[in-house]
Length: 486
Picture 1 (tube, rainbow, N blue to C red):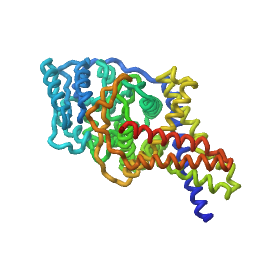
Picture 2: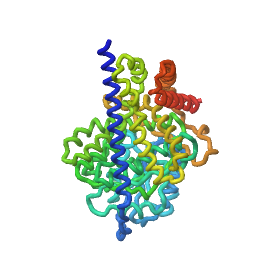
Picture 3: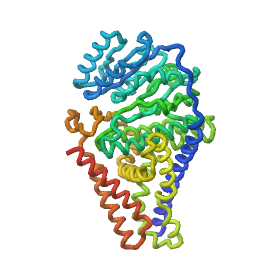
Picture 4: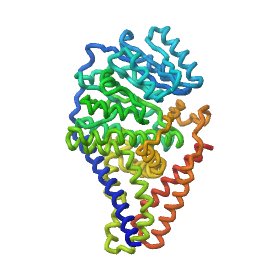
């Protein structure tokens, strides 16, 4: 029995070590970002206008397709140098909406076409690969259906291709509906940190970054040289990014160019997006991590790439540590010599402080008022709490990715919601069926309620804040999942 208890403690400790190392990588990025932010330079404006193809991958985007095309038609760029391809794999009325809008824009002199495939092979990656030989531009710009670039996007972004080995220029994601609900506010907090500290620091330090699937520009030759778009992962953007950078192509991230988009407003939509991102990241890590670690890249670059590719695996460590924390609470009395260590071993100690610094740095950059401690700390607490609640769902996705289990690309539905008074419930797209994981999340609410009870009854309060956040996190996810499907 003692051997089992020791194994449990070792496994629990291993999870905490991984989480602490991950937080150190985030601290590394934060310090890099704060140093390099003051050293960025603007390139000179365009003197020559290269040929550009704008690709717009769509699948059943009835509510945002027209808005997207109207917005893209306003791009300020010489029309003789601009090609627009609508990669429309839709199976609903979106096809007719796009056809009507394309016809109207063609009459206005735009070089725009609706591209249809007989089969949706490869999903988004397949659509992008299918469109590659049809694209006449030297540069390829990609926007998802809900992204609305400013008219001067190309004029601002293209100058960052300052030499012929730069393969990608990636812009920051903005948010059309940041304040729609608590759910969108918390998503914005997480995404903003990625699009400031993470992308900015990695890029400034000449480390691996990733094209984010949209709101960016590829040099067409880079895509071809790296082997084109593959659809063996759910994150074709991350996959191609690593293949290109391993072949020596350079990426540029531009924080000061923002393209606003719509955040998911329902828990099922958020979960489907998180599932795709976390599983795809695991699939890409399985595909490329060894190549990265054995490449000739500097050690620091490999260190940051290791945690970049294993970013989604954090959810596995979080969930495992959470599940083990209750039995650890029970076995602690059997190891009095470890009581002091265990009392301070929660992930909500040093790692929590580091992550708070990481997200606060982002908030201070993009939302100075929101970055004040009195407003930031409650939102950060809720963000971490919600992330804990998503850990079961995301862990399943990660394990499926490492196991090589293939699943379809499930798009995140968008409803053209930019104001709080608009109601997503009137949409015609059905939400996913209730997942068996929902009931497991409900069970975990009871599990961590038990953890709270055990801690209080034993007068052992070391895990109390941790179990309270886990209870709230799984409770919020369970509540929102039921509410948004009713």
